[in-house]
Each structure stands twice: as structure tokens, then as C-alpha cells.
Image (cartoon, rainbow, N blue to C red; front, top):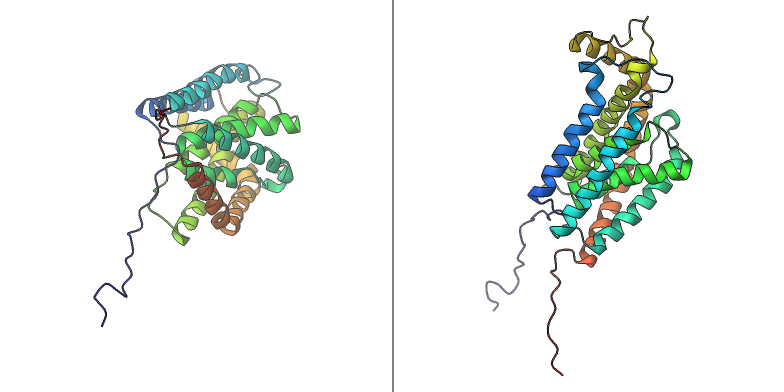
Length: 284
């Protein structure tokens, strides 16, 4: 005769794991300020009067670097001082940034195929929003060094990619299994269109001239310029580059997402981010 518990199995409730790199309140403030400043740099032509230039926003690129680099340094220092990032997390950040930089030339943006974003989404999901923000900027910067893609567009690409990693880390953490993959695939598609719209806003005020129905009009009402921008984006990138990028993200996340998520989570467990480091006295 067996007891009531001899053949029973106990199942612990599925509790979502916390992000490996937690965001302290101070770091959240840094991220908020950085995001608002970056958004202003993207959208200021709607509220000001941008003048056409030979190279779109060539004068703003140094300013953006002046803004973004101290923000990235401040974010890293804040995370380190708050215990959010240790040497193990920095090592993983460097490895993933190197992998992303190597993946990007495989697509090279042909027909919108971008192989850099799916890993950014998955890593942001596992390691948290602060990690995703750093990974987005570092990945785009490293890939630009490899492909000689440094130009006035680079800081804007870094900011847009950082938001993708940040957004992935902020997604609801309770989803698991197929629901998690479906959520990440949907986010990857939305992020693809959002990235395309932001990069269009980077050059649109300076590229279509002053004499077309899709042109930016300095000093025009915000809604009027936004309408022209929406039509411009739909005709030039939504049904081409952005859709190709969205399809690439969805296919990569659906096919590779389960295995990559498992590998990243296994790496985080083995790195034991949540185990505090203690020092004990040794008697001699």
C-alpha cells in the first residue's frame, strides 16, 4: 500500500524569470532622458524649419554622438554601480555585439533583409531593457566599423536600434513557449516598421526637395508635414524595405527563437548573475 504522496508529482508554478540585468531607478531615469533627447533629435524638423543640405543632417551627426556616447557611458556606469552589470554580463554583451556585427553584412539590407535585429530582440528579452539598449548601439557601431558604414546616419541608426533592444526587454515577462515566440515575432515586425519610419524621418526633410507633393515644407503645420511623411514612407519603404525587414525578423524569430532563447538563458544561468559574490575569511 502506498501513501498519498508516494506516486504523486509536484509541479511548481511557472514563474517568469526576472531580467538578468535589472534596471535600477537611477538607470531608468538615464534611459528616459536619453530616449526623450533622441526623439527630439529625430523629430525637430516638424517643429522647426530644417534647411536642405547636400548630406542629410551632416551637421547633426557630431551633436548626436556628443549626446549618445555620454548617455551610454552613464548607463553602463549606473548599471555597474547598482550591481546590474558585472564583468560576466559585460563579457556576454561584447560577445553578442560581435555576433550581431558579423551577422549584419550577411543581409546588407538587400530588399530589406536585415539579419541584425532578431538577435537584438531575443537578447533584450532575456537580459533586460538596459542590456538591450546598450547592445543595440554597440552592435550598430561595431558593424559600421566592419563594413565602413560610418556616416551621418550612424548615430541615428544606433539610437533606433537601442530602442528595439529596450522595447524587447520591456515586453511582458509571463509569456512562455509558443506565446512568447508569437509575442516576440509580432514585436519584431512592429520594430521593423518603426525602425524604417525613424530612419525615413532622419533624411526625409532633406531629400525630396521643395517642389513635390511629398516634400517637407519648413514651417508648415505639424499635421500637414506628418501627412506628407506618412505618404512618403508608404510609397518608398513600407511595402519594400520595411516589409522585407519585418519578414526577416519574423522568420528568424520563429525558426531560431526557441533555440537561441534557450541558449541565452542557459548562459545566464551558468553565469549565475543572481548569485551574490561574498568573501569569507580563511583561518590559517
